[in-house]
Image (cartoon, rainbow, N blue to C red; front, side, top):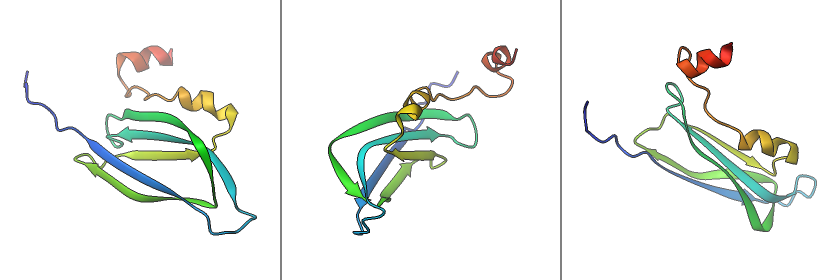
Length: 111
């Protein structure tokens, strides 16, 4: 077995709450959830699934990504959910990666 260490994947995501002043579209942002999967086109791995409750909610009409840097694995899926409905929280807290087809765990789940 090769003892060589795999490169560490590092990611940086910066988002901004943007308020263009359109009162019809303004919403108070109270929570933001980040879900990040690596190796999206292969053996998918869940890296982050975190719900953040803002101490000081902000008003916004849009959420924009300012910076997204991933090294060395840029084969990622990033999901950001603002103000997730309470009914969705349980489902998102339960997010995990489904085993690849043919794995023993997946075969047992298919029965």
